[in-house]
Image (cartoon, rainbow, N blue to C red; front, top):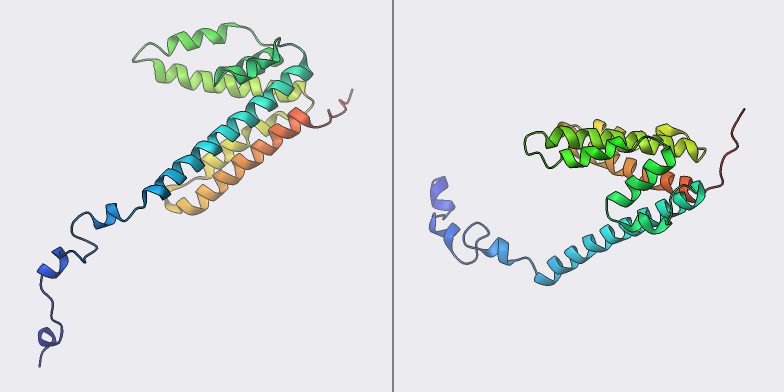
Length: 182
């Protein structure tokens, strides 16, 4: 009695209706209610982060008293940038880089430059609010530590760094202003 006599297996066993490999059983095993719940959960997280950022930058604009109206913080993507720009007191010309984003070949360079200016504006805004400017760099630390070989550890550190940056933004927006040393 050999091994093939004990194990009764044929390739047709993989194609039948009871298999996990053949057909659409894996795809159809997802419950539509679960998928809808997942999308709703992600949507609510995105809306919550948007509301948090808008309220934080609205309060920063109110405390810096350079941006009127403070409701400009509710403009998606541009509102916080306008508030950071006003609070930092920098020149207006970096806003011309947004026009450069429309040039097909050069737009990546313009986007990178806008992101750099956004970090500079945020750094100076944190300084104006009496907080250390390096707080702005915390999300970058998590992104740099992310190494594909250590995906789980890097992803956790990146997630923690974003949560810490949200908390620090709240401290900047609603915390007591620190005393400046002369």
